[in-house]
Every structure is written in structure tokens, then in C-alpha cells.
Amino acid sequence: MKRNVLSILLIAIAATLSAQSSRVDSVSMGSSYPYDVFYNLTTGTKDTVVNTNWHLAFSTRPALPPANVMRSTTIRVNASRNVTLYKSNFTSAQWKNFDTTGNASWPIMNNGDSSWDVAAFNADYNASNPFDYGWGQYNMNSHNVEGSKMFLLAIGSGSAKTYKKITIQKLSYDTLWFFTFSNIDGTDSTTQIINKPDYKGKMFAYYNILTKTTIDREPTKPWDLIFTFYRANATFPGYPTMPFNFAGVLQAPQLNVARVANIAKPLSDTTNATNYSKRISTIGWDWKVTPLGPPPSGPWDLTDSLTYFIKRDKDSVTFKLTFDKFSNVPSQIIVFNIKTILPKSTTGISNVSDINNEILVYPNPATQLVNVSIPSLSGKEQMSLSIIDMTGKTVASKSVTGSNNIQLDLAGFNKGLYFINLNIDGVNSTKKIIVE
Image 1 (cartoon, rainbow, N blue to C red):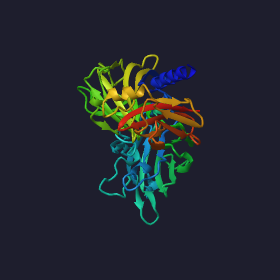
Image 2: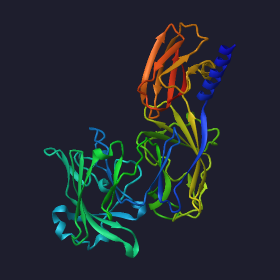
Image 3: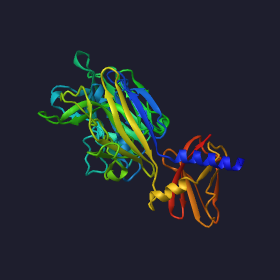
Image 4: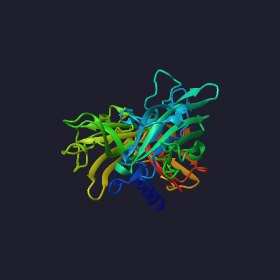
């Protein structure tokens, strides 16, 4: 009797864990958006950091040649916080003779909202030259990216605006950033070094020109989305395409996002998500609209029948994101719904449903060992499973034949949530396991 009760309890727990989960969540970026919020789709973890204390962001990601080299040389500006970068007519060899006469005609260098890999300082790179990174050129002898251009940096607005001249001297061995800036007349000159390995696992090291400090802003734990205030080009009726500041959502490099429109949110399904994109602003800002036009200060209305489906690279889990509310006066809050969609079997949902009702995963939470079994099987089926962590990485796998039970050793696993992908004679199912 006790055994039957325990089995029923384990089945109930397993069925609960395997169900698709949905949660309503919210973030606040504060009045006038002084905060960024880094968000993890799996855990709902929110890391809120100040976004008004930096001017430049230097890439700390390593180069991965041949396809992913540009990402290591990127330098962004905090454009939505009145940081403007002008490309001057001077070279770094003309540092002492730098003159801002005619700077109104100098091109303004913008971050863009397509990729993290190309931003203000390297926006004018020559795509036909594999050694051109915008602000500098790769030297095959020194193995450095060496800069020769001078830029004008404007910080602030109105009478409080501060001007600095700046040159990026080099990125040495994809490890050390060297850059120099000063007042226009050359006074208060500073040469700064940023060591990429100090920010391992982060995308950027952030720098405040006025305080001459390097800032570590990004969370140490994995994140998927950043709710932020950023500058992007937009077109409003009666106005030319031009840059505006928006509150919106940018995605991490490992994410693929599909935008599904004109289907009621409750009815939208992964089958409607036909075009996934790595464009960092696939979600962006235009899930809301303002009838007032530019400048886009609101009030805002949510765009009807708009859904986003999100997948990480090499991850079998899909997240469905819909927005429920946006308020920029006075509460500065975004309310949204996240639904976790686990993989379905290609042989039909009825088979998966039958298996889900019988799979036992115990103990759960687990510490050292976890058992996955289906007592009703004959024992002749082929079973295989893999355990996937929250980043989508497969951390363990095992296959058996002639048994209806698999036992896995969890020694060395970090604490947290994992997904167990189970295949039985070609029929797939997914469970969750918590490791303590």
C-alpha cells in the first residue's frame, strides 16, 4: 500500500514538472529609464544595474576566426545618454594639431541595432577588407589591431556639454585595449588600458570618460534579454528616418527570436514561428506604439496580436513572450508573460502524453543520484536520455537496452534546474530535475 501511494505521488510530481509552465513577470527601469535589467528566461532572474554611469563600452569577447573576429574589436557609445561620437578629418599622428572647426559636418558614428559586433567606433569598417575594423587595421606582424583615426566625443547636452578628443591606439593580442583621450587643447591627457581577461564571460567592459574609471556592469550569471533605453533609427509618418531614444528589449548573442504578428496571442504557436533571427533588436521597441509620433515619449499602446518565440542556440526549449502592459508615466514598468514550451515528439502528442503520465523521476530535488524509470515498459525498449543545463549545454547522457530504468550520477553538477530529454523507441519526452 505504501509503495502504491509513493508511486502515485512520484507520478503526480513528474507530471507537474513536465507540464508547460507559464508565468507573469515585470521589470522596472525607473523614471527616465536610469536602469538596465538583465533577464534570464529560464529562472526569471533579474539583475538591475545603472545605465547612466558609462560612456564607452569595449568588447571583452575573444575573436573566433575566421567568422567571428569583428566582435572582439567592437566599441559602443552610450548614445541614449547624450554621448555622441564624431569621426574627424585628423589622424592620431596629428594629435597636437586637432581642431574642431567644421565638426558639424563630421559624420556621426552610431551603434546600430542589428548586431553587438558592429558599433559606433567600427561602424565605417570596410567589409571587403578582412583586416579593416573601422577604428583600426590588423597588423600581421605585430598581431595587433592598430588605430590611426581620431574622434571627437561629445558628452552631455546644451551648455553642460563636454568635448574630448580620443584615439584608440591598439587592441594588443586580442587581450589589452589601449586608448588615449584629452581635452581638445591636449590638457588632462589620459592613456587607459583595459585587460579583457578581467571581464571573462562578459560582453563588454564599460568606461566613464569623466571619472576615468572602468565599470563591471554585466551580471555574472547567464542572461538572455536586456530591458534598456537605447538609440535606434525609426520612421514615423511625415518624418524622415532618423535616430530616436526608445525603451525596449535587446537579445543576447545566443538567442534566436521569431516575431509572429496578426495571430491572437493565446492561439499563436511555435508552428507560426517560421523566421528566427539573431538581430539583437528583433523584439526591440515597436511592440508598443504611440499615436503622437515623434519624439516617442508616449502615451504608448501595446501592438495587438504580437508574440515572440525565443530559442537559444542548440537548445530544445522554446520560450513564448507576450507583453501585457507598458507604462512610462509614472511607474516606468513593463509587464509580460513567459511560457516555457518543452519539446514535442515527432510521433504525436498522444504518445508523449501517455509516457509523461508514467515516467518516474526520483528523488527530485536530487543531490547525488537520480533515477528515471517507466515501470509499465516491458524492458525490451531502447532508452536514452541527456541532461541539459539552463544554457542549453548537454552535461550528461546515457543509453540502455533491456531495462526500464536509468540511473545517473549527479556528482560534480552545479546546483540548479536541468532538463532531462528522454527517448524511448523514438518517442521523446522532457522532464525537469532540480539539483541541490
